[in-house]
Amino acid sequence: MKTRKTNNLIYPFTAIVGQENMKFALILNIINPGLSGVLIRGEKGTAKSTAVRALADILPEIDVIENDPFQLNPNDEFSLYQECMKTAYGKEISSLEQVKVIKRKVRVVELPVGATEDRVVGTLNLEHALKKGEKQIEPGILAAAHRGILYVDEVNLLDDHVVDILLDSAAMGVNTIEREGISFSHPAKFTLVGTMNPEEGELRPQLLDRFGLCVLVEGSRDPEDRVKIMERRAAFDNDPEGFNRQWQEVSKELTDKISQAVLLYPKVNIERELLFEITSLCLNVGVDGHRGDIIILKTAKTIAAWEKRRHVELRDIKLAAELALPHRVRRQPLQEMGTGIKELNA
Image 1 (tube, rainbow, N blue to C red):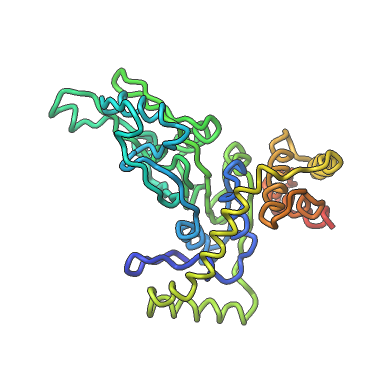
Image 2 (image 1 turned 120 degrees about the vertical axis):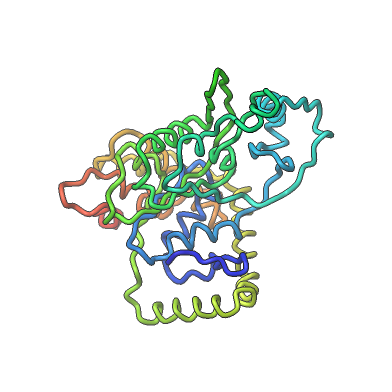
């Protein structure tokens, strides 16, 4: 189910029927960007793109400097802003009083499948160079995605070189533009969300492991749910403004709950004994490396914050494992991704 914009309105996130694991994984990544994103695998028409694009309406607000192409935090990254504006545009900004700080929602930035390296990384503004004889940076998609969500539809079809760039930036939190003797770096910390149809090809293992969470979505087999999907879609198409108003209060409640969880997350604790539970889960399914352990820990703490608790419980770890391990388990040929995770948690 692809998102249709009607009068610039997007189908509400809270109106999506079913797909609870997908919605929950996205919400957890909003609460804690340190989860390293989510990969949504599934057949066509299962609301993958709809859910990701609808995130924009439920994301919390952040402080930004008006018209800042690098989306820097005026409170924590102002010195970086000064440096970026001087290097990229030759502008001297001496104090915060010279700029206007505004609030806006965290953005969902889309990366087109056919995006070139220049479009992703950024390049020189050739028009400015020809007209004024000055070198000026043209920021790319990674600059726009800083402090936001970078959404890649059909991520498995991306050019390998672009995938490598994404991996480097996601790992380092920095993007570097090197063109015509200029080397310029800026922060690029983003939550990576990818959607894909496994029938069109799998991801390289290097990229697969970079996604913190992974969920499989399928079309509902429940006639009641399928009818509800049709009814809601028809209602939205007939009157998008009226339909969105109906879901406005529920959406605001979700946004408020997310904001509360963001504040609570740093205060969540976990007993050391439960860390051994995490390790056992990962060892029992043959997870390589330590990223799986760390992601389960972060996810379990995020789940506890979502449920307004300051202590992680065993059930948080079991749920976190179902989201963090399916794409990390060693599989035999022809074995389905995620096989055995729920059984292990039983």
